[in-house]
Image (cartoon, rainbow, N blue to C red; front, top):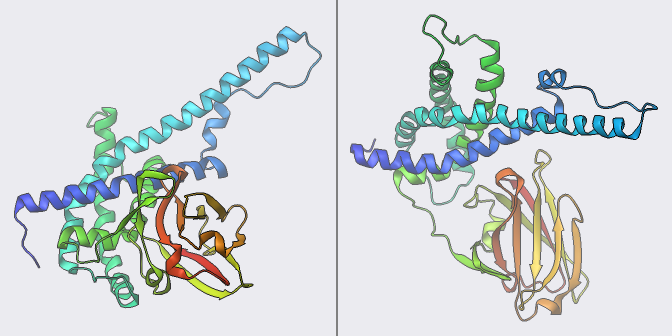
Length: 332
């Protein structure tokens, strides 16, 4: 196992924290959104007055009641935000506590391969249980003390690890947000600890947005099932289309619910078509419109659901005339 001097290890820990924390925070926010949607936190409802009922009262009275109801909705939103912020306040020290043992285990695992193929995935499959077995108990140990310090609880009344509210409000959401983030970003985490041995990322300007730089990918990235730099796995297949036309289709894995999109532009950066998983999934256009250039831009939902352009493929690399390109987003 490589030996790290203290300064190098602190640097690795800081890099991992910078990568992991935003992703974990996003997962935590999605967990709270789901709790609101499916009624996992019903205790807020009984604190609020019921909405106004239709009665034969003067207009002024109905306006006052409507104003009270609007204020109650605002209060409900603030209460939800406060609940999220309470958990988010605990998140950073929890993540900081798991980073040092996480770095040690990543060092013992060894460096990643240049590309994440099936053999590398099998190696991850054996490593992940060990990793989670180390990280989860640490999270459980530090949470009660953090909550006690945050709330100024007296020592004679400690927060107990078996407390139901502790587990439902804090431990459950934090674990649910943290563990998937660690597993999904294993290639990047290993590269930070051992040194990046993968192919350097190439960047291209986004059509119509010169300051925005996108990761450039090629045909091989979409046919080899390698994991891309932001954790995505995309498969592209080609089928015949009528001569003189090009078709674009998008699909996603059955387990995936996050939004994805594909944009096609010509050499003047004009948008020709846009297909998405939550709308039109198929489009066709004349091949000559991209004869002199153009690009395919792959979009995805990122932090807090924001639609973000991620990857760019020069369309000339695909020889698009008379072809239908089927893009399947298998994982992200």
